[in-house]
Image 1 (cartoon, rainbow, N blue to C red):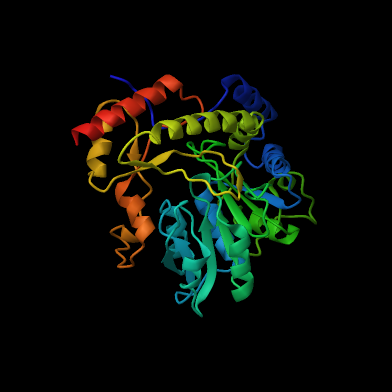
Image 2 (cartoon, rainbow, N blue to C red; image 1 turned 135 degrees about the vertical axis):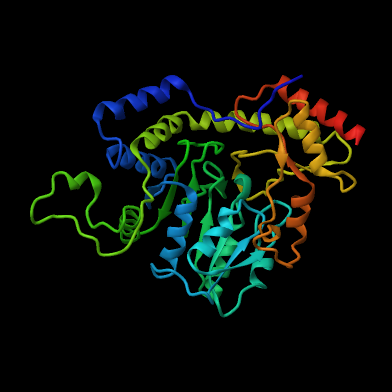
Length: 381
């Protein structure tokens, strides 16, 4: 029996260990200079002149981003935030966590929210719109930004999966809007766990840096050398949403060869597509719009014919050693939400989509085994 994992990070041990040793030797493992280096390196990679703020994870990043666009405060319980249901639950839960009400929108064939569906959900109570660049596929940001201008509603880009992808030649994250990355273990660029927020002004950057560190007025590096006239104070109530230097060191190491990973993922993704195109009753899930000038291939998913019991297919594949999972769930259908909203494309993926094993170092032999076993399982079902 084969044993092919769903995913694994592309970490070069020697490069990562060298980066970690530098941090450990410095004795700055929390709030030290490596975090600043990582923030600057991500900004430079994006060819951006904005400001980048590292945080503990993308969920905390989205919470801060929503407060930032809401005049740096939490929401009223009557306030609404439009957010796609086809996403990891964090995209929806953060809306509840900042005190607002989520209004669920659908996605298009590319798996991303689109203007026509978003616009019909706008009301007088709409205070923000979260768009998700799902599985690394960019949303059509020109159209969405025009919608933002038309109604005066700020956009938060959930770019958790999209580091390295491009929209019309520009890296996702290099944007007029507030954007949030995830560096969780299965993301293309990983720090094990972590996130980053990109903003346009130094004022917003300083507010985020304060909020990620309990609302302090003094940066960690200045804390130990502060004079009597430069003592730490707290002029707002923040929380502990900081990234640490060990995580940042892993990210710096990974970033040094990140483009190599994207190319490996590109080769593997295109090979999967060539095989899936030859199969009956299976559709490619990773459809990429023309405006996406570079795709990072964050994950690989497929869409089964409606005659199949998707969960049963996943179970059979797993029992034969193929690491896979059901597709991204529809948040609005989760028991705690239990919405009656009908979102056709979201529910199609929710019921019939699944992820195949996919990572930078997957071999052609492993991919061929995945396709062969998938064909066998489908023929038996």
